[in-house]
Length: 314
Ligand code: ASP
Image (cartoon, rainbow, N blue to C red; front, side, top):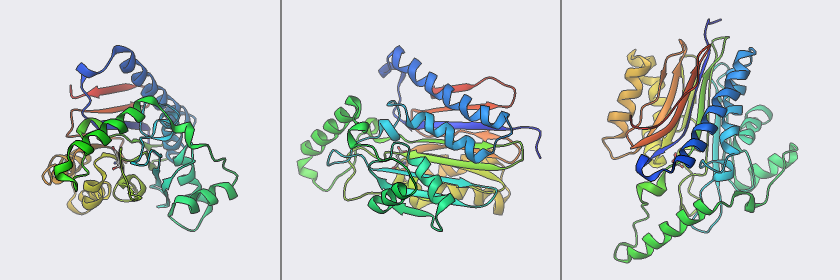
């Protein structure tokens, strides 16, 4: 039993510049982040578990067209939406993930279903959707995920790729169009931790590319010491097994949450050229939100306090 509980969330990291953001968009993003924190907090305040809190907090961002997850998911090279998600319960050590799902409005709910109702950890594509239907989850038409902003983002990425005709093998994207993903981590009043991450992946991805958000240890991890959710260029997070790396640094090296997350993001992710950030919470309720990009949509809320929401590098 702890005397405190807390939740932290992110809505993606990247080249998020105040000069490029309209006041209306900024207000809408802040309002959704605040709502997400409040929904998770309400559950924790009623004595609910961290696992439910992170799932419900992520649902709020999945339902919004403003974030790259659920409704606002980015487009693949073929103009489709393929989403990844993972949820992990630090108390039981159980986890569930889905990869490349196309017709799931809230991929984190399917990840939870995989965790609760299957003997597996990761289901992908058509099989994952068949499992969803068999367990009473409705599929949505791909049109549900159409937003003008994301469609234009894909068109920009395709045009850029076309222009780079002298470098056809280069599938890299501009920083602007690259990042997204939403996530939450929480500590409940029982002292249990949980983490959840949901993502449309990267604009213009192809060949069935799957990102770190579908992989336990890379994009999401929770145990009895800490809970972590990441956002950024997934390939770097996969190679660095970043979410688990934070936990390992704490367990085996005895680092604090602040030290472990700082080393993981500012050195181990940054040195090879990885961009992004993460949110993390430990068993004592310490929270860290490091990133190496211009900005990261982020927020946290401690028991008895007011929601803190930030976007830019202040
Ligand atoms: N990490 C996600 C991926 O690589 C994208 C992001 O967080 O921006 O699929």
